Length: 400
Image 1: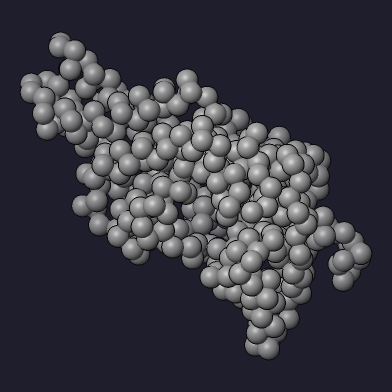
Image 2 (image 1 turned 180 degrees about the vertical axis):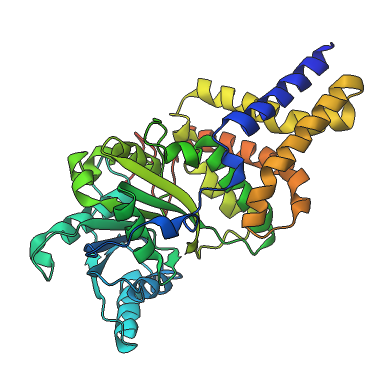
């Protein structure tokens, strides 16, 4: 065979492996509504404290707090919002949402804390989470004089359906999981969201196959930071938030930390929904660039290997199909078809047309560029930039 044919064959071989041996990531079968009826309902509903770190989240914090106040959970449920040095009235809007929920008959306790200045060695989010966890876990701040059994870490842009906390606790208790995490369903209405967001979730599943994460016998561990129900005692046994204080990809770090303490679970959901808009290419680029180079351990070697792998996996198939001849063209076509097949279940989950499937190479090319941009931002001293802070390891900045 020619050199082009060998390259095309390698690309097809990658897709054969991915479809057959990578934990069935592409099937999108690990979902919180699958087989949930088999889980026993707890005899006693454990106490849960929700911790929400919020920095300049005026657009979404009210909706998020309201959704948590309206949970149909029968056990003790309290909400702690940590206002992380916001300048847009986030704290006041959180209090207003809590007051409105009370007026509507939902009497959940909501505490809004003023976050302390960011110390060195911490990312901003984890420092805010640390303060919220410490406050929520202090028996003196709880009405029953006890620390909560579970902590629900959720982002300030994640709205929850009324049954979500109940379902999370049912899975954690009934299935014996020290961590239950949901990949919040990202907004997918604007053009760039529709074309790029489903692929983002697909790539995450490709990197961290949910079936492997959920298998106690496998070392693979991950979580999705937008919604993580954590067994408090297991977190403390693992060293607490301090153990991961400088991690930008804090959710996956939390997954690794807690899988050392017991079984964890990660799945797709329709019950936790992101209300943050990503309606232009720049916003999606920022989302990816913030963490991609950290995922590669800030290594130029891993970066180069990743870029080559992405080109072989996603770009070679359409290039061979469109521009090669003979066996190289056929091999490229089969690889492109396999790629499209792998994309269809995620497109269905996000209710997008199957006609988007063949466009995955173009989407992957953009994400490849975003990955390189992540390294470029790190080299410029702006790694992990979020809400005015550079948070990459060794680049943590003070409050802006």
